[in-house]
Amino acid sequence: MTTKSHRAKPPSRSLRLWSQAVTEHSNALDLEGGVFRLRSPRRIAESLKQSAEQSERRKASPFQSAMSMLNFYLNRAGRNLPAERKQTLNAAKDELRRLFQRPVGSPARSRRSGPAGAH
Image (cartoon, rainbow, N blue to C red; front, top):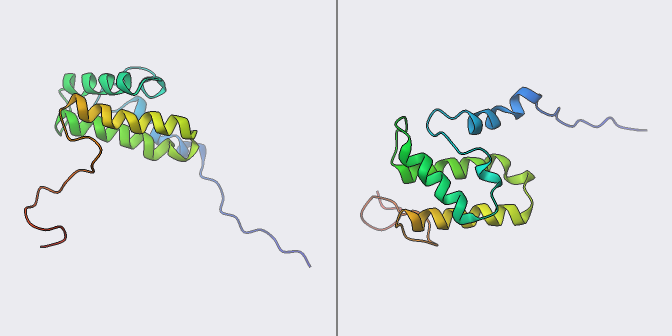
């Protein structure tokens, strides 16, 4: 007796490409073409910083906008990226923190005062 496989249907092409459209046509930042394909973490960070600082449409600080776009790309493309590429893009996060003179190597801290988890 054979059983039929009940795998989920893959998402349609239009659903899979929505994140590409956001990256290419973001209304918040005008990104340099191919910024996420650059080899240098420093160069990626510099490009994102420049785009964020020049944008007049962003709603957050330049640092938040640049980091958000980098995280968005990593989160959407992450499972399809080779480990070396992920490493470069994660290193770009630290470079971005350095360029904006933020603490490097530690996660963002809450703006609340008091011990973590206390409300």
